[in-house]
Image (cartoon, rainbow, N blue to C red; front, side, top):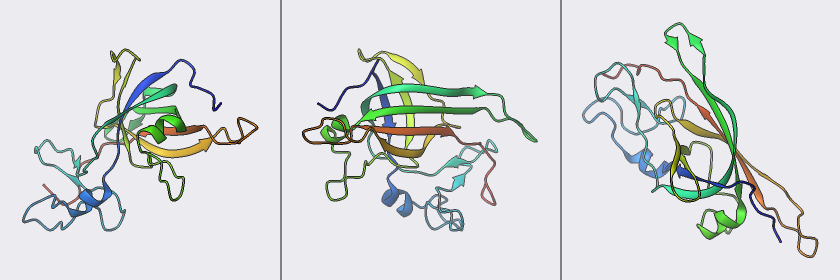
Length: 179
């Protein structure tokens, strides 16, 4: 017995492919040589469509649908900045390790969940597959923490059962030095 999720939904999660992102040439013949900012070590922003807003250069693994409990904190909350409104959103999903194991999303050598910081939430569906909420990207909702919780259930062989995943929006900004 490892317990179960209460009121489950399905989360469409796109995991960041760090190797493919590092190898991409985001601006062709321009000055950038990889998909990561050399100072901040996160995917660079490139204004590919000339709208003045930089799009993240990132490569992702194929989407995965995972059963989850949804714990909303804020959705499109007003957050004013000098450039206008940059809505803030935050949501937490509770995932069950049995589902992660079934999808091959637990590292067998370390026991770490492979849902990690930088992964992106694209949508939430009901258990019949009907769309409940699509997440606009940008700004998107990205994993800022993935923390195992619920250790020690089932006395004969204690195991962990839940992963609490926090998703937060990112502010959109114009790219630096690339047009």
